[in-house]
Image 1 (cartoon, rainbow, N blue to C red):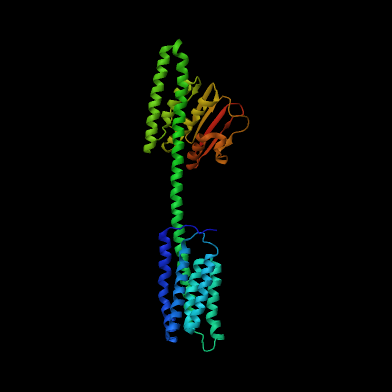
Image 2 (cartoon, rainbow, N blue to C red; image 1 turned 135 degrees about the horizontal axis):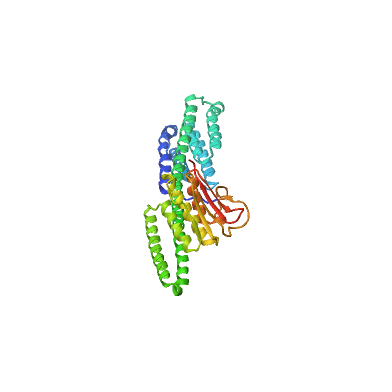
Length: 374
């Protein structure tokens, strides 16, 4: 598996984090140089130190990688373990301090469980080696240094990873918020233009039929088409500006004109006063979507809009959408079954804790009903 590309900033932080700890390597290096005063062995000490530092630093860029190559980390750990053994040979008992770096490196490359086993192994060797190597003594301070150093490094590694994961999650949340807003905006445009263009189409067809027999009525319908087109353009501009709202009173009034233009008898409430302010805009969207579907699909003779303080219902006596009981959109959210208009409408209703029902009536026709909490 190829190594995942990570930002240069994260790699730089990993290098800095690894390099800072190398200052504690001064003690075993100094001891090794004192134990081997001749130039040849000192060159060996310097070479081992350089290799150890390079291997150790090379491990930390893997800290920011989400999917490092499987062989890279273990290979670096194996090389680091070999050079730590060389430190023990060169520096004697002081070389045990290099085990601190092995524990920290394991926290970068290995999972939490394997890192704990890896650290435990090196902590155990701080006790075992003095028992088998003549002249070495068990130093509790050395064992605690390895244990605490490895734990501190592993904890800091986990903290860095959690911070990076949190930032990535925040970026993903922001991206999803933008996507949701785009979806909401597209559904608003669908609701607005779908209704307006449907009425414009119906009125244009009516004007075409009346142009010869009743030119005055045709001219009136054409004027309405022009007005509706201008209103649709204004609605789109208002939506883009973020100020679009659907007025219940205006939608009921527009419903009467739309139904009459389509030759459908309208049975509408004379007033909307019983609907409280917070629900008026939502009910306006329900009336808009319901009337649009009636005009476009129903082939109905009569359409009724019924209002209560907590519900709105649009009912027609048309062809409906097929046999069967009404379906609950809350439990059937697939837009392919009922179109984008009802999908967006369902989201508006559910957002205020309500339910939306839509489907054919047993006695014929179609019903769209929204209910909201008191």
